[in-house]
Each structure stands twice: as structure tokens, then as C-alpha cells.
Length: 539
Image (cartoon, rainbow, N blue to C red; front, side):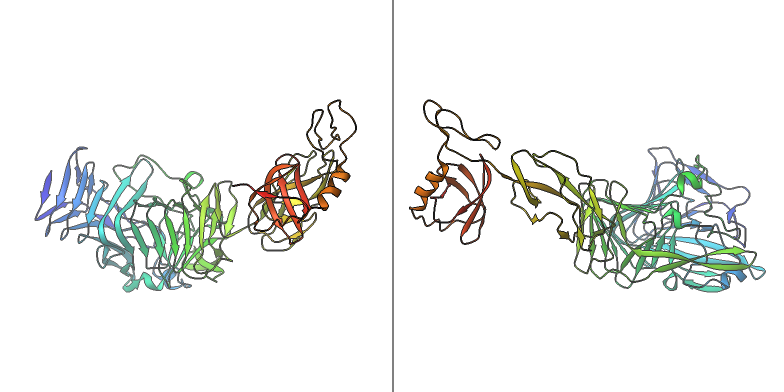
């Protein structure tokens, strides 16, 4: 272990970014290569100057310690073009901070200062930026923030273990002081942000997650967009040549000792992705571009929470460039579309403050799906019916029943097979917000008789009674006898288990005052005049 209480400097030199030229390492540089089990500890008052590279092992920066790195601007457009950009679009989209390739953990109270330089107006314009710290773009409120470079994927990974904030990035650019609070801050496309369990990351800056960005919210963790701010997630289909003076889609890291992988548009410029296994909270607004991006839940435990009504913006902006001339492009956006496991989306546009949309069985439930599906179940019948799709939130007639069942008449649909759910008539107009299955309901059309020595009734054959299998049971005579008796049948409630003297046990579905509707285990659903048969409640 190497403890730094004073200053440790690893030398290196960078060329300033200019219109059409990326900031890059120039000439010789120093590199501190740590063994896998080795580490550097920057103590209170200590400073690590990483103008070259630190690789391998690990680095810890304690409260009061400081680390210095280069802030490489990869797509500065030049002074003239930058002055022509409006619509809150930031002057550049692509940047890197990765001289320390090793996993570097900054504890609360530590800070990282980065240096950027651009060449404009015939001079070099340097700028010192507090990147991590109390006044930085990343503020560690409690716990720690770990930054590491993965050269096998060419990605910079930020891991929050505790509480942190994304705040404004402040720098000087071409002689002008620039604060990201006046812009949409781009989160560059090789960045990964991980929140460990029970961690909190609050975004206090309107930001855009560009294609390729990944965020992972562990169970128990929360990513929160604060009130008054917005986050835009880009689908790769809505991203064009919005980088650099040559209208490129992205620019990868120019050089790093640990880099073994070259990113490409086809493999790596994917939809911005947020894996929500914890909570994603919109106290401000969360948008996706028109095609939807990728807000899902790998563990199936995600919660999308709205503390304000969905935003009402319809476009955001990016710019292409030719020479020093820039052209604005409108990017259509919508309140966040949440991606289901099958690739469909659940919309949040019609949700409201206080709503929670949960990820369950591969589907975000509680918002409005792009379309809903009605699946028809024959429930003992025969035939085929295709599933019916319809727009959510609009009155749509159900397709006519096509199922048949010998000895039964179709009486309608129900959301439960036993008829205890919500009932719908054949062809009824429905207004749905989520997928449902409707079960065909059937009424037996044959005589039901007592079970005696010979044969019980079925729905396709009458029953017979008597020791010798004699004449059919006189159901009409039996009914007349029963009508001479009076039974109260009071005190029963829907859902009670009951017993009929002939049909056996079943469940009371409805008491209309005069008619009891009961689903019997033996004969299906029957409607019985109240007071004519002794219906007993079964405990």
C-alpha cells in the first residue's frame, strides 16, 4: 500500500481540443501500474496528480484528499459554431475522465478536480472543474463514489454506495463561463452508473442520457429526478450525427493503456438503458424519445414513482454541423415509456402525481399500455377465438363469442373461470387499461335430478331413480313440493360457501333480493328463487 499524505504526480501532456480536433495525449507520459492486490490511499491533505495514468490495483481517497485528472473534450465544435448553438444544447456531447483507470473510491469529503482546455480565438483556454466533491458535478452526500475504467468494454463505471447528487458542471469554454444549469447536460455514451442496495442518487440538473448510457438501480436503491428538472432518455433510432464538426454519431476514447475494445455504432450505440430493480422517482419529469429507450427491470422488482404529473414537453434538440454552420434538429419526446419484457411499452403520459407503476410478471402495471389484449378462454367449451387487441382508455366492443359447448348455453364472459369476477355480456363495450383474460360462462340446458340407485343426471343425459332404474325423476313435482315450504335464506353474503339439499355444496355469487345465484361444484351456476329451498351456510 502506498499512502499519500503530501503529493504524488504522474506526468503527462494533453493537446487542447479545437474545432474538429479531439483532446488527446501528446508525447511521453508516466504510468503507475499497480499489482492486483496493491492500492494507493490518498490521505487528508494529500494530492494525487494523474496527468499520466494509474492502472491496476485500487485507489482510495479519504475525506480531505484530492485527485487531479484531465477532462478530455472529444467533440468541441469550435468557437463560432458553439456561439450558434441554442435550445439549451450543451456545447459538446462527448467527454472522458479516465487517467485513473484503477477502481478509485472517493469517500464523502474527498474531491476530484479535472482540467479541460480548448483552442479558440487563437489561444488555449484552460479551465479547472470540480468534477466530484461538494461543489462538483457529482456530490457525495454520504458513503462513497467509485469510478473505474473497464477497457474490455471501453466504459467508465460510476458506483454510488450511499447518497450522491448530480449537480451543475461549471467550466470556462472559449473565454466564456459555462454552467450546465442553463443547458441539458449530456451524460456521455460510454458511462455506466450503478446504485448499490439502499443507495440514493438525486439528479438536480436537467440531463440527457445519450445512446449507450446504462444505469442500474439495485433493489432498495432509488434514482430520483428532483422537482424542476428533467431527464431525457434517447432511443438509438432518434440519434443522428450530433457530435463533432463532422456530424458523427459518437467518438470513442482516443487512447488509454487499458483499452482493448473499440466501440462501434452497431454494437454499442444502443438505446439508453435504465434497469430499475429498485425505485425510479420522477419529482420532476422523465422523458423518452419517440421510440421508447429501455426502462426495464431485470429482477422484476421495479417501481416507477410519480411525485408530480408527467411533463408536457414534446421535443428536445440536437445540432449537426457543416463547417462553422450548425443546424438545429427537433427530437420528438414523450413522458417515459416503460419497456415490458416482450418489447412492448407501458405509457406514463396519462398517469398522475402519486401514482406508482410496478413491474410484475414482465409488465409495468399501473400506467397505460400502448395497446391492451383480451384473451378469450373457452372454459370447457370448444372452438377457437383469436385474442383481441384494442387501444387503452377507449370504448371498444368485444368480439362476438365463437365457442360452443354441447348441452350448455353461452351466457357471457367473466374475468374469473368460476364466474366470481367482473361479468361482461357478449359484444359488450369495454374500456380497458391492461391485458385481461375473459372466461366463457355456460348454463346447463338439461334436467338435473337426484342421485339415487341408478344414474345421476349430467348436462347431456337425464337422470333416473329407483332401485330398478325406473322412470325419470319427477323434477317438477319435487319443485312443487318445495314451493309449499318457506325458508328465510337470510344472512347469506356473496362469497359464502353454501349447501343445497339436492345440488350439494357451492359458492353464493349474488343475492339480488329475490334470486340467489350459486356456482355449484356438481352442476355449475344455478339461479334459485329465494325462500323456496333451504340453503344452508357451510362454515
